[in-house]
Image 1: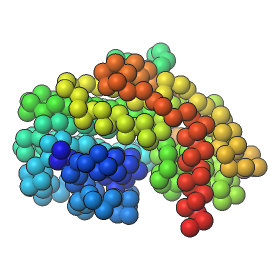
Image 2: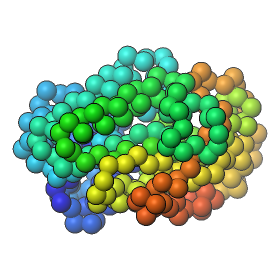
Image 3: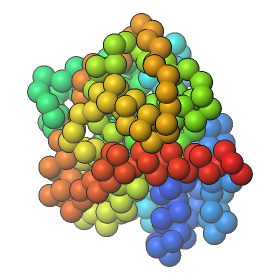
Image 4: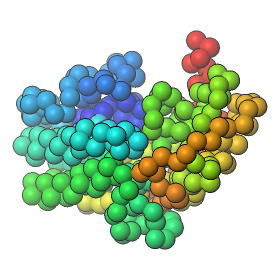
Length: 308
């Protein structure tokens, strides 16, 4: 198929692009390289450096005529969204709307949207969260993703485009940028490997659902052939505390220092993990990477890249 991936030079997007190219698809990547890296895009993919709000996006989508679009380009930092909610909304809401309109105008048949489960549901009423859990985000990031989902539903229905929304838990794995704010596994691992202090926000008892990037890519590939619209949580169904994550990374890295605790950040949820029953039934998908195995592989990848 002819496939377009927005944000395809980023962490999840580059892994997805690799998999799509490996499966024989013709892939165009649209990325402004503000956080993505050109080196992460496989040579067989066509990289177009462009902001998704660029007026030329519609012409690009029409020219490449993709049969399917994966929209991963986003502003993904909760803490930055609290400080700059206008920027967050510009990228995640207006940017998504721009991509949707370009896809509808070009007759794209399938649209797969990367959303969030960790920030969308707020403080859960029940755990694990199902897709029917009330959407009541605590951060501008979560709010912007909720608004974007509404546009995906509305414009998809209006244009006849098939849409699949994937609500990710906390994604981790090789290639994640340790200098960013979104990936606690990468941040902790990089600091541990360098022998630097590790900062934990709050008491470390907050719990998250950590899902490996390979499993997230698998969910996207399955969404490509989904015949009906759908909304799916993509996680593990298991909550892991930051303290437990820290201990796992200590075992993988040999780190010997205690963490430094600072006050919790505004907008962060205390406890959330996702029910993935719908993805099992609708996509035939299940998480396959145990956390300890995924963390070990991630640390080894980071260690190898530091040596090179």
